[in-house]
Amino acid sequence: MTDFTELTALQLVEGYRKGEFSPVEVARAALRRAEEVQPSVNAFVRLDVDEALTQASESAERWRRGEPAGLVDGVPVTVKDILLMRGGPTLKGSRTVRAEGPWDEDAPSVARLREHGAVFLGKTTTPEFGWKGVTDSPQAGITRNPYDVSRTSGGSSGGAAAAVALGAGPLALGTDGGGSVRIPAAFCGIFALKPTYGRVPLYPASAFGTLAHVGPMTRDAADAALTLDVISGPDARDWSGLGPAPGSFTDVLDGGVRGLRIAYSPSLGGQVAVRPAVAAAVRRGVEGLASLGAFVEETDPDFADPVEAFHTLWFSGAARVTQPLGPHQRELLDPGLREICGLGARYSALDYLAAVDVRMELGRRMGRFHETYDLLVTPTLPLTAFEAGAEVPRGSGHHRWTGWTPFTYPFNMTQQPAASVPVGVDESGLPVGLQIVAARHRDDLVLRAAHALYEAGVAGVAPPPYPTAVG
Image: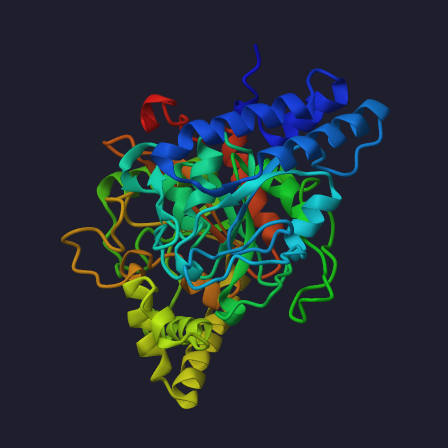
């Protein structure tokens, strides 16, 4: 018998088209899996069982008539609880957000998926207002890693990554302001894409401004391309969004990497200490790209760590998020968030503009870099998943999550497309991610390279040994 939770979105759509199975069967399997893993992993803040089954039944009828609504009709999807989804509250991991409605509006990406017939399983966990690179919050508790429940799933889209890894829906929507789809993808062994800023419209606007992207989290690059075909394109509510996509991202997947010029930077010029098992797995991935015909050169982009400028932008955004809160509400906040809000509130306008200057210079440097190289490849993270419930690894000496994510946040500052691709595991069986970065607007190149790795068998890790991984 087919295990529907193991199928990709593309495989599901093909099965519906051939009449081999029904969206109702698939939705029931995905919901059952979500309910089974929730007690141990805590990937969801809400499962909408009745509504999902109603949507699946409507999809089944459309397929019976040969009139699917769109590209993902009948495919189970989850939505990070940062993005609006009509019919229920979006609490953003915070006890300061009131659950009362009406909650009658979809975020643009959710609206596009709904138009294409997706089946919404529910909302996934996030740290409070998506502020850090792990997923725990006063409102929802700790989200754990599918490969080892004593470890973190990463964040801030940690619930989304855990759900995809465990088969609770093949497609997930996440947000990424400093690595928040790529970090949990690397820790949980799935694929995630942070598209070029504005490629996927965002509404309401993020308090973190133009650092914040919306992107797909999936089993592989092909499903991400399919999702991007659905959720990209303009929405009048996002004044900073891009115009229509230049074409189908799915249609260009098979372009391969032959002839592409790839820069491989294993440590950003020695700035980052990478664990040996991570470095080895990423190097094997890079060798895979070379074997597929890419021209690979080990070299580094010319920039110093922009973490202080990122902190100015990020902490200021956090302060803005919480500015309306009174003293009692502030006591309900995650203590780490409360701390960075205090720091952010003390920055001046000149401090902020100085950080913008750093950002613009970084963007200029990367623009020039991509005149020579089509792609930049790095580790997604210098380490694998650490203990759950901690912002930083014990004994690391880091104070904030940015201390262990030096490969991710720079490319939010530059607004470039970047993806995390699973390329192996460490000695403890924990997944390792390889990051692929392209120039702005070249999401197609990122997806092509990632897809080539999947097709060659270089990308992908064995799924968690369900159910023992969560039992």
